[in-house]
Image 1 (tube, rainbow, N blue to C red):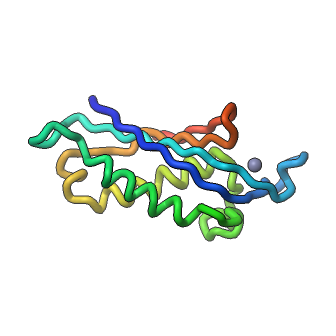
Image 2 (cartoon, helix red, strand yellow):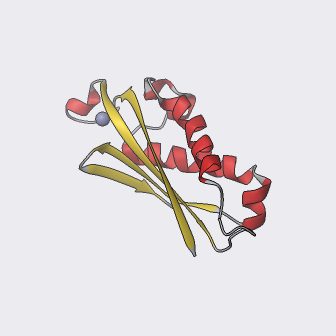
Image 3 (cartoon, rainbow, N blue to C red):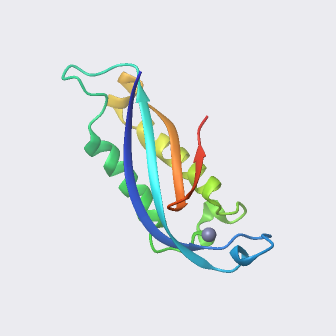
Length: 128
Ligand SMILES: [Zn+2]
């Protein structure tokens, strides 16, 4: 099995509804994102998928989140925008983009895990 990882950062605000403490108030983070995909196969030139393609997908998702108040995004209207749920959101969005790519479909690339760092020392992951 091969694994590829891409990284990105975005800045945005959120607040945790029902949290008994400071995080119930609106505040910001510089979120660090890691997306890990895996593949059993490589193509004829020895790569699973071009990093450029993976980065272009992550950029599409980052543009939905960067400099936004995450609570106002439709996905997070009823789901708390915790690091855990943001990881799940990115996992799902990335999977949709990957599934629409014929090349990644033919070589069977899957999102393995998404890591979301709220701070340098606090990280939540989502995987299936
Ligand atoms: Zn926070």
